[in-house]
Length: 143
Image (cartoon, rainbow, N blue to C red; front, side):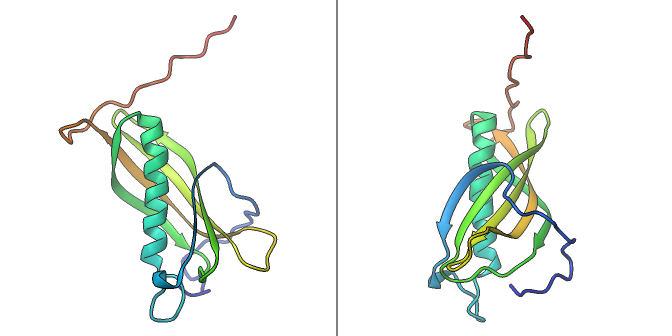
């Protein structure tokens, strides 16, 4: 990854949004040929976090079916503390879309930095791997 913002829209985000799903440390084994953290590693961390959120919502196994609107905004470096936050965007009958944000805390920084975000779609599946309905919470009642 580079610091170039070619395809990333301008953002004014200063704080992570959504539920914290995963936090990990970027290590030397996760680097690309330039010595930066490999984008595929970061994408896999985001998918793991999204899977955690999706399974919690679906109350069953889920699988990733698509990844859209990925924005690689800033490089991730060895030693960065990476946190992935999830926001539910949409729930259908068997699928859901979750917006995931990856933020880092750099060693000498006090504020988190948004490095990557995107929309991940997951499908709830049964034990045979077939799509199954996502349970709906009961409607809220007023007393």
